[in-house]
Image (tube, rainbow, N blue to C red; front, side, top):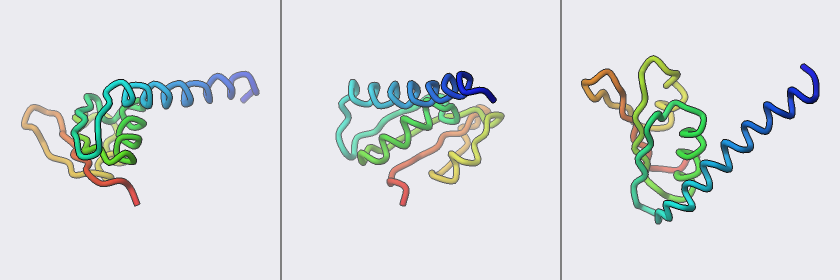
Length: 95
C-alpha cells in the first residue's frame, strides 16, 4: 500500500472519531444519562459508544445481526428485540 493511500485511510479513522466526539459534545450528556445509538455495529457508533462509556454515560445501541456484532456484544449485554435486530446495553467503562 502506498503512503498516500495509507494517509487517506488514516484520515477516515481520525474524522470518524472526531465526529463521534463532536456529537457527544453537542448532546451535552452528563454521567449516568443515556445515549441511544442506532446502527451500533458501525464504525461511527463504535467510537461514540467507547467515548460515552469513558464519560460514564450509559449507552443503548441497536444493530442488525447481519453486521459484525461479536466485538460490540462482548462489551455489553445483548438482547433480541423480536424484530430481527439486537439491542446492546452498555453501562460500564471498559476495564
